[in-house]
Image 1 (cartoon, rainbow, N blue to C red):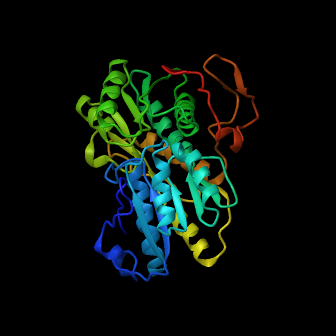
Image 2: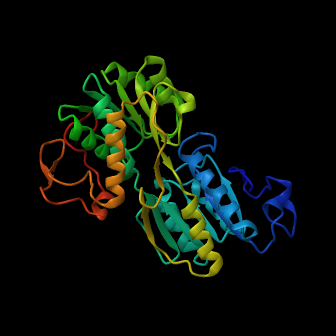
Image 3: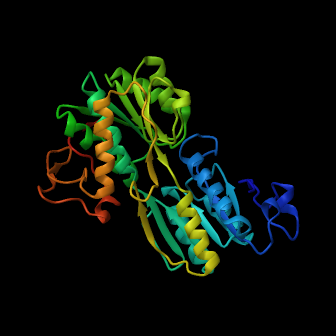
Amino acid sequence: MANLSRRNLLKVATASVALPMMGANGRAADALKVGFIYLGPIGDFGWTWAHEKGRKAMVDALGGKVVGDYVENVKEDASALPVLRDLAQQGHKLIFTTSYGYMDQTVQLAKEFPDIKFEHCTGYKRADNLATYNSRFHEGRSVLGTIAGMMTKTGTIGYLGSFKVPEVVLGVNSFALAAQAVNPKVKVKLIMIDSWFDPAKEAAATETLANLGCDVITSHTDSPAVLQVCEQKKLFGFGQGADMSRFAPNAHLTAIEDIWGPYYTSRAKAVVEGTWKSTDTWWGFKEGTVVISPYNKSLPKEVAAAADKIQAGWKDGSYDVFAGPISDQSGAEKVKKGEKLTDDKLATIDWYVKGVEGAK
């Protein structure tokens, strides 16, 4: 399991990889080489950390059949191209690109290397050798929104986002709609920081949300900085991508945990067995890729019960936060009563629901 340098991927990172006839951890040279690129450090305790746990789970599950390598801190721009080429030229036959901003780069490399299988996370462009996969994070966001709507005292809750991409817009809207369902007068203050991982900017934006009257704040960025500020200010918050309660034992009400291991294992196994096909996979609570971490012991029983009901509803199909009527920020109806947003519209959503303030 080697961490390959982003600046010079051709330099061997560990002695085990350097062995001419062996792969990482002493595995056979004919094992499938699987590569991952990450936008942040594996120690962010959020998004990238969750993907790294998934990579390790894949390697553990498939034993000597696979070797898993990764490159961390890869920017979501043209600089990702040489990193991907290096992985391809080093013999990785399955490559996962784990963030939305890698979409066009992954498409380009899939054309350059038609014999290599690529998988892009949270994107929508596919090819015969390029699959897409995602997790229904919005299902978890509706649980957080339900809790936030019931826990707020000020009626103003905060959402710290990264970029205006469908995944984040979907999360904002799910959070807001669920909160409004239990607290119709609640307002959601939204701040975007144009970064997935920048603890200093995340902390500063959280301070701003607190100053705007938000007493419950959730984040769609990757560090624990938001929770740490909430802890200091005696506010409530939620973990992103992983249970972050260690950083804020009082503020941390729960978290959305991203569980990627089963998917990575299934896709690598398909390549090994020769059954891999380009697919568009979108799993959630039902499949176990979205998991809610243990609730804070201080969470009132009625709030925990309401959150549990939302989870159960997603699993059995009786609940959908995007059931109409739904209006956008301008008041225009986007989803009629009796209708629901379809997956294709969820995957490309670019508008915010009524009640979201601070971003257009």
